[in-house]
Image (cartoon, rainbow, N blue to C red; front, side, top):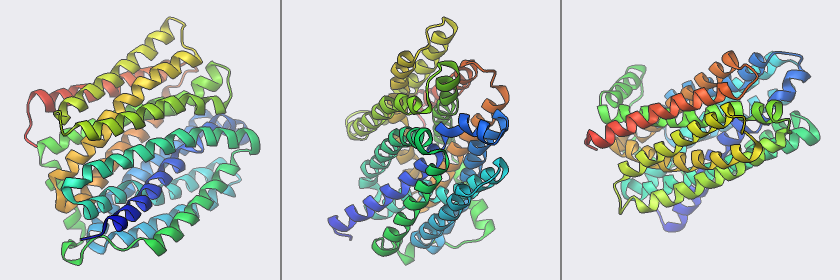
Length: 397
């Protein structure tokens, strides 16, 4: 039994690790319109810097979870951070858009550990009864990182250029590597480690997706994250090219959205003891859908401004804050002995959704906010449908 102080120390390290994947993905996004001019390339190629990151992030998680269940969390944590540092260094020295795309792929393979491993470590340390609140803290800190990253990224880009963001990621990676190496003790007991083989990985994932209720949670989390990624991938272009503002202003729009997410996540993980968590999740999906509809209406009526986009971003943040931490916790508790594999499956689904959304946005972008709105409505509607299914069909948890 770990002491309360040891648990708090481990939680703090996991919060730092989880935050790095948010910074890795989002810090460069405000620079995307400028990257087009810097490398004299197309919108599609610039969008690929985000698409390949999400794709590599998604695929890598498939292995991180099962490998950590077999060999322990710490070796995988250190390996993931090391790979991330290498990718960030390569990105800093990139002289072409192709090299930058490759560096983002390497970055994503390392950053994926920050998505998969913290929920698994928390489940190791806190057990089923205490993991919901601790995982809620992951969502809160991820929200804070998401609040800071776009603004800091925009500020760095406008002041020092896009390479400064890569340099910051190198420094952050080195700090977290040292802290994890020195202060994080292995949290997975030897007797709890599972056998590893490619067949075992396949069978583990087959077991997860054979359970109908897990599939529903998987789709809910993938689609609700897809709403955010549609806003994230398209928002910077809307702000810079349609509203005529700077990339820093996109970061300012993200601030109230993320604050709303953090507050919502904080409240949701505390009130779920008194209310059916499935109702909270369903209402959250409705908030996100409402946000998507209103942004589309504002666009077609010519009323989309910095302030209206910011205002309805609040609803998106609140809705996602209700859905993500509770759905993640409920899904992990379906398979407590395979927490790493469950975390990997959920993370893979979320990032694949992001990669697909980013790719679609690059293909259909027409110079107007319409592309972003259509993608937001589609993904949020999917979330509402499957939240309804799990709530009103009364799937057994």
